[in-house]
Image 1 (spheres, one colour):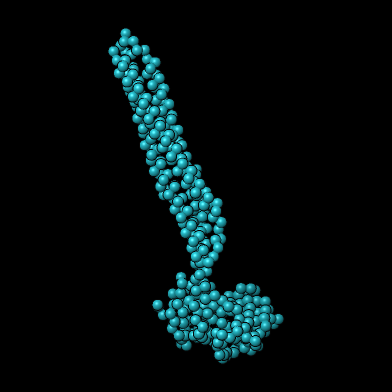
Image 2: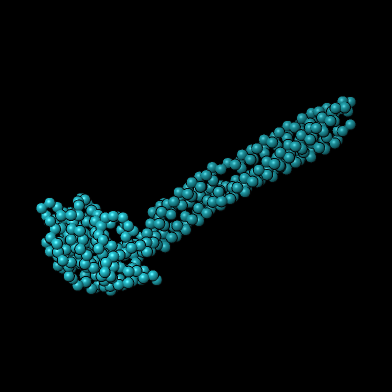
Length: 366
């Protein structure tokens, strides 16, 4: 696995999530420069909240990456999809005390697999945090001379961090610590999110394709055209039979023969209609119709299996889409069976009329 180098933070981005104010001293309250805190990282077995913590001062820390941008806008929690970017971490501070405070630094500790693997003591651009405000500080660990240890990608994804101390104008305070998910948890959440998005998209596609398949009336149109042409053939056959058969009129046999040829042509037209229907059946069975809806059904079932394998529940109700897809496939297969039966019957009738017309013509030659 590729090694990652986490180095001391000197680049800091500030983003205010509530009550945006500049990360600079306010008028009449210049931040007092303070040295970085000196602390001993806690043991992983020690309770998360120290008895000496400052009530109302809450801080969390999360390992991530910096994809660029200003004021921490490029920070993302680390996942299997982005761990190749510049390493960083983010500190979130909430001031639920009754007093404003100016924050200028932190003492942070990093853990993986139950071991303290590194600590950092960054000094940040001072920020005045009013009571009730939340502030986010992004620390890029890709620069500096005091380098953290090299770790594998697996360790980086399992790494967590805590804020042990907050450097303020009123002294070094111990915050109430809150846990943030590590890269493994972030990756799992991302996998669930992607799977839910895929399910939503595939369900929409299934609903659309099922409606399109259900609305396909091409076979019914083909059968109607075959019946129309068969009716024309029947009319021509009747016309042939209405020609006088007496040989006294020398033109009668020629007219009868001509009518027989017309009937034969009608039969050929019906056969051509059947070829058109067969082509439409092939199309209806293909990827743009029945096979496509079947593929959609398989995709949705696969999405459901993926989400459940991740221990999550589907966020999209797929029942109506699946029911519509199954119905459309069943109805279309029934339509094919019906159309093929109608087609064979119509062609047989057309061929029989053609044979009768030809025999009638031969029997009445002069």
